[in-house]
Length: 267
Length: 206
Image (cartoon, rainbow over all chains, first blue to last red):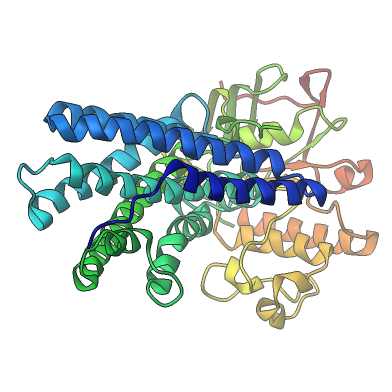
């Protein structure tokens, strides 16, 4: 089966409908028109650019170009994690912890999946490596950002409780235990929900794409299950690392709570 | 009566306060007064090592830095003016085992099964004292322990606390506003004003 060609003017029709949606929100004074249009514009520009980059990358298929692309994706994801925090850790710790957590989990799981499970030739073949890493980073980023935001915001809201628990002689781990569990939960909720709803409520994007491209559904399903599991692993371990490091950073070597290490919220 | 080692502050430096040196012996109650914002609470927090500070705090031979933070705070027990309750049930905030002194404070043992939301502010204040004592401290730092109580309850809690202090033999620093209360409970008095501690009978460790 051949994929049906999609022309730019056909995309323009879809874009027109997004503009119509924006116009409706403006008419209803719901204040989302501008945001919608900017985000839609970003999607077009970013995806068009990445399409060009991928064409070049696939043509050359050299390891160092793949690594460069992967590092660039990682750093942008790290920036995005910081941008999604209401009260981030000061002094570069928010970026450092977020990026390190995503590096440790996404890169390890992606490399393992490529070498041990899928086994393309060579193992870093960009047609497999880049989409796999992209999907993992995207989801891990969401998990890490949600968990860190919940952790820092919860700590700020409940600083009096944490300090009272410290006064009673609890260790920092006990004193922040409830908030850490909450943070883990919110980081993992999206992937847990996605796995629970897969195939019943929603048809996952990658599987849909493969089926549209002519892959037999049975094979597309296998790939989708694999991707679901790697995303869960990446998100889970990434969130684990981020919550462990960030919660330690909220206390000093005398186990004092240090809310002064959190930035004031942005307006 | 159990005896505890004395609490010593050697040029303890926190906030805008001039460095504080003092000694509180076992069974002594040092009452601290002073206008709000003078740094009484911060001083107590520094002694409990909840706030970064300069100078030394020792408990007999034991210095703050000899113990991990939580172990120091289990000994040097700070009871804040406003207590916090994080678990569902009141009893979850107490270490396992029986809780002494509920009835003397006008509370029934059933209070331990109550949800926290059912407590009045006065009950919280009394239970906060109980749960601190239940952890077997060596020093008590009390930040306005009767702030939310009416007169009659204040007298009752005061009498109970003094009996427990006589029995427990802790060195105590008690932040209070009411001169009448200070007259009743203090064995020594100090005042924080214009950035320094003024003691009527100063004692240092040196």
